[in-house]
Amino acid sequence: MSGYVYNAENLTKGEALVMRTLPLTTLYTRDLLYGNGSIHFKDLRNTIADFLVVSAANGSADTVYQDVRPVANECVLHWCVQTIRASYDEGAYHEEVINIAYNTTTGPSPWLATPFETEFQNGTDVFYMEDIVIDTDQAGHDHVVYGTSNSSASAIILAFIDIFPSFSTVMNESAVPSMRFKTWSTGPAWIRYLDFNPWLAPNNVTRHMERLAKAMTNVIRSTPGQDKVTGAAYSSETYISVEWAWLTFPLILLVLSFVFLVSTIIKTSKDTGAGVWKTSTMPTLIYSLPKETQAQFIKSPTWNGTQDTKKVRIRLLPKTGWRVSGQSLLNRSPQLPRPAVQAPRGWI
Image 1: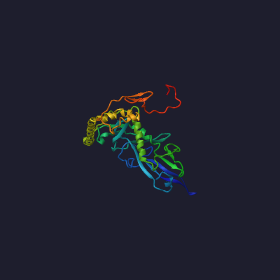
Image 2 (image 1 turned 135 degrees about the vertical axis):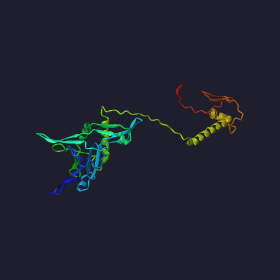
Image 3 (image 1 turned 45 degrees about the vertical axis):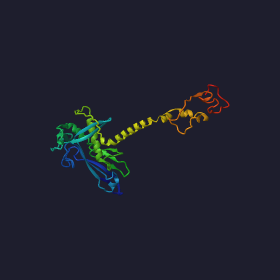
Image 4 (image 1 turned 90 degrees about the vertical axis):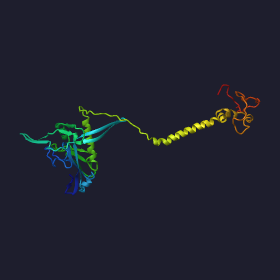
């Protein structure tokens, strides 16, 4: 599971084994290496793949050359039935797995290995004899049985013989790892140089297996011609609960503000003098008159409605400016000095 090539002549260390995958059943006869073919998952039946992943401690050849013990993980892929709660909110589809059921019944090995010998060859025929049957009643849910045929299960299981077993080596500490797989074929194994190896430490092997299982599940669910599962569809509604006690202060503040506004309106409505003065155009007209005319309007330092007033007519003439009734024609409003050169009449 770990080691390196040692050259005794020049006392140098060569190619190092940094990763190996080992299935817990043999390739052709499916003989079990550890009891029922598993170390930590003996209760699972109808497993797709159960294998060991052994990697150098830090994923490099340094620890291999230093004889550091490698890191081993047992991984398993198995058939299961998932109960999923689906939801659709604001254009996004969500799924939540709320229960997982799988087959934990005991029984003989589903593999049947039959040796054969002919005039030209000999070997062993291997068959997967058991259909996949999973009863969801084991998890306390509705009694529904799911499954698939032994031929479909066998086809999926045999798809993993290309990578289990396999191994990855490096020529030195800085070399690119090369992975050898399809070791079952006659002649040298296939080789591929990897920029990234998910099985190699310190990568998260568990996370990689979860993604692999999810990808396989999505492929099965998306296959044309699969049976649809009929179920109830629900839509969510939003309800708002109001704690009226928390609204007491804002409501009281709103009522008091309204009372204050109404009181202000009633109080100021009786002051007619100030209202007339603030809303009229008289200040603009008065302060644009000649100074001797303005003096007649500002005899008192304050303006109120109790003072006697007289009617005054004010006109704005095009050539002579403001004119006030009862004033001399010689009194003109201030005008800007005329420039020496003027534009013709009608020009701006």
